[in-house]
Amino acid sequence: MLFPDYRPRRLRKNEVFRALIQETRLSPAQLVYPLFIVPGKNKREEITSMPGVFRVSVDQLKKEAEECLELGVNSVILFGLPEKKDAMGSGAHKKDGIIQTAIRELKRSAPKLLVITDVCLCEYTDHGHCGCIINKEVDNDATLEILARTALSHAQAGVDMIAPSDMMDGRVAEIRATLDENNFESIPIMAYSVKYASAFYGPFREAADCAPQFGDRRSYQMDPANSREALREATLDVDEGADILMVKPAVAYLDIITKLRDEFDLPIAAYHVSGEYAMIKAAAEKGWIDGDRVMEETLLSIKRAGADIIITYFAKDMAKILKRRL
Image (cartoon, rainbow, N blue to C red; front, side, top):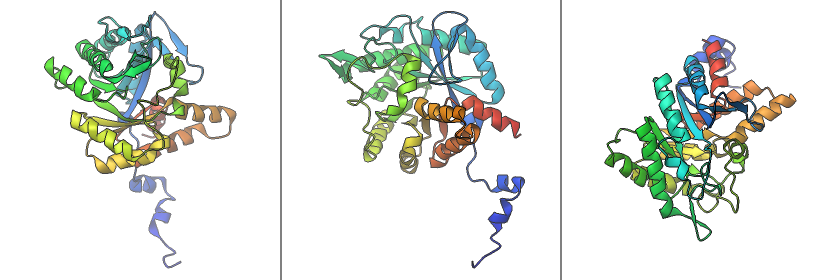
């Protein structure tokens, strides 16, 4: 070997030196914790396929928020399970809907918490699709108005950021126009710009009770085989006014995160989804892997690929580890 005393090798032997030269770092402030909100009181139900993740009622949100803020996880994203569902997902935009009520509670009890809301219809439709069904097909254009009404209702309740996840064409422009027309110009949109028709969403569909009752979502979500399409989809969202671009899932699509990072100067978010979380949890429970180390390595890979923001069910667990190192 030409340089047997290669210095970084020596530096890596010392923990302080390793910290000095570490290229990629995780911060709790860049993690977003998902919360599933259910009707009722005093509810905290563990999700079978997602150990350590719970559905909670609105009265439990203050406790969740305080724990997140104490750990430095300053942002949450909300998913709601309504009492009733219908074909048009009308519960999504009700003034006193589950998410609207949750937003008001969080802004009252934890004003420093950044509250993001998922905007989609799948949790509110009795058929489980992300849009209106007309002639047995998801109708893109008919869905846009409902999505915009939903986003507006969230803004009126006090939300800090809107995150449309439906993958309907034109929804960012429709939501942006509706928010601006109603004097909510300052509310940013974090668009699920590149959302693949992935098999990694299974546990989430249990958590949110939103599995499609017929067919699948391939007609409006992306083909896992496509990468150039990701740039086209993201470009459309940029042109329509998106403030942050998201890739979902994260680990199986690290190359896509990097493509967006290289192409755009907007912040890039990545959703470390339920199936990716569940696999680590299951293997750790079997003793096949060191769960904490695999969790951290996985989140580092997402950050290293180019994500500025990571939505992950591991947010609190990772933050606890980072806090212990201070």
